[in-house]
Image 1: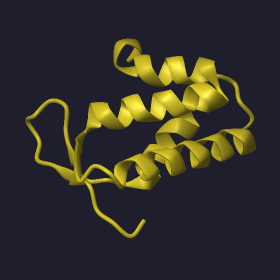
Image 2: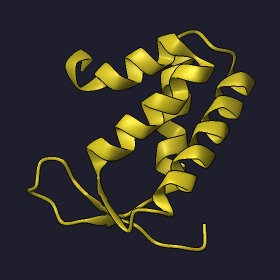
Image 3: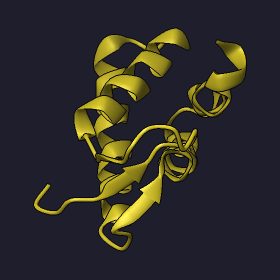
Length: 94
């Protein structure tokens, strides 16, 4: 990624941080694995979703962590609706 995006944390208590593709990729992969997706497929899905999120981020120099989650869920629904639901609801599940 040859651009930077500030992520405003949703609780407002922590400072902003730079977008980190590897964090999003790991989160989506873990969600897919939780939905009993084979590891290779989970990583492929995560890469595809990250690509879509990065494409969206190019238009937004500053976003919230909730924005990132909403956009990733939107794209994850195309590949794995069950994992998208888990990813969207993770704050309620934990």
